[in-house]
Image 1 (cartoon, rainbow, N blue to C red):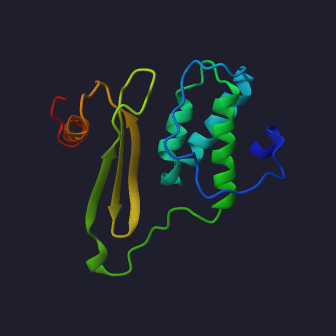
Image 2: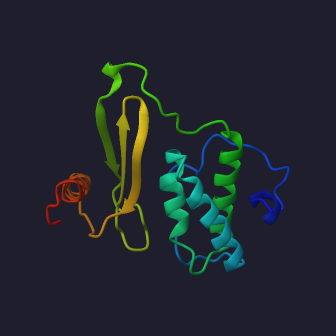
Length: 169
């Protein structure tokens, strides 16, 4: 059974954004709860899809935070992500190096400031490219609460260096 069949979304519309901009989810809100097993099953399937779709890493990470007690608000965001996947079904990673000059390695990272409204922690996203192909990507909530956007970027860089070079973070 596919995800669309599980959620009875066979004829739902496609969209071009996985989550509304600046949307903030909370662990507790006034909306009714949904079937926890169904929510976990769908989010688990999306987590598997992140292996080939780095554009989903942040959004799937956000909805994964609410597996304990999901509400209709959380499920609406999951459905939006599924609509985005349907609208961008031909996107994915393509690997291959055509020339020797294309073997450069570059890393991009970014953080938000207090993106999680429940605990005020920031989220860091990192992606590595080999040539034009993404090879490693991760989106992770920071372990500390930062007081400024500068500190958020500093914490993100410090955690990356600790992971890459074995430094204690």
